[in-house]
Image 1 (cartoon, rainbow, N blue to C red):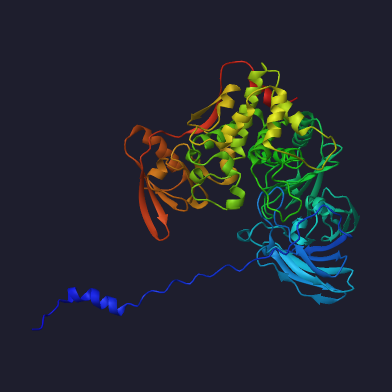
Image 2 (image 1 turned 90 degrees about the vertical axis):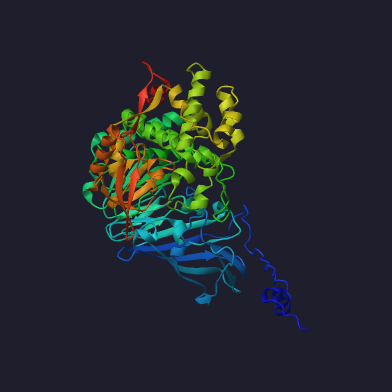
Length: 638
């Protein structure tokens, strides 16, 4: 008798026959990497490097470089393109803009090989009998903003030596002598902290070392005006047009007071000469970058000519100037590096940038570059931004010091939840709280002014670097007045879930409030950035073309489902304008109906309802009580 099996019963047996036993997956091993790049040593480099740069091709934005590098012996050698740059806080070297690299000796080509791991390094073999190698390369400026910062236009250029030179591995950069010669367009003027001998368009710069060279950039242009501020300090101003360089005496006098107030504050100067390399342009890329004896300061047109509304941009020069003391002279020990290959560690940026932010706003008020009233309004915006940020629930301030390395300052969709480089402004809040504690503990006899002089005012005339740790900061504070500064600062930089540390302002006499009318400073900030800022009502910012540029995490717009990058087309049935949206926010106070938006997302039009009825809200500071408080004294000229 034959028994028939069902297909279901037969299936397991069939699978067993049809499926072969699985072999073990392949498991490769990593190819070992031997680091053949010599570590930097604090020994002199044998010979002086010469750089000859042709910066005349302003039509195509090309810098052409010829570099001669003496060599002591034949054999393997590594050349480095600067990678980790002071003031940038991350590996920001623009190696992608390097072009046409050719290396030779005695007229014969030398083959180069890029390091397979560190792509900023080039391996060569120096031939027998060679006393020097010749390096030819170009630095190709961005020609549009989507390529990066534009460094050359037909009227202006920004020459950063690190972008157009290689240096030998194995040496501290301060031990590498270098001399540079640059040819600029006919009729142009060039400015730098480096002294130069000028012969028409050819500038021959003083011999220096590679560290100082990189720290001494050049700005050059067709339209130039010098504004001496003191025997040592000058604004070297360049612009797209001569009209932008017309400044009133009162405006320059305020900048003179900036220098006076800074020197009074710190009690020392860490430069032999200092140059604000100042560009007013909508063609050359904007910038704010500190150097020991100069700063690169780039703003949009209107700095002098639209003085009544340019106050948000006028914090730039006080901030970068303070960096000569804080960040360049005194520098976090883990941030200082012997060359431009060694990675930087940014853990103390809440001192480096945070306290610079603190003093930048103080000095703008003390000097009158920005009025006290406008400075108070700027503080209100800083406080409100951090006070409404949900990101403090999960990410501590000290972790934001890693943000330059993590994000490289690329745009984020959810900044209010991810956080960005909050060590700037939250650092300011912490140092304001320190000021209030110093005043309280000493019954008004001591303040942050005493810290500035004790910490940054040492070694007058020294423009080397003195590094510090958190313990050094604490020791200096305890020298002013005993307090558990270690615990206080550690808590502030590591805490999560706590409110923003704005209590220092209240202790110093001012509290944050919201009103339905924006301050003049708030409106100027909107104008300068071409935005409509509704952060404290709808929880959103609208940029050019009605595109949403920011959404506050867990705010009304977030709750409605909106996100960054969408374009608003209509408000409550009317075509979108900023005024229509503000009118709708005000009208919603008297009704329970939501504010309805039509929003374009690609080819799709979507309807969103924002259930918000709190009216327009704009931050400002309100004085507590009467009489002079700590903040009043802090902002008063000395």
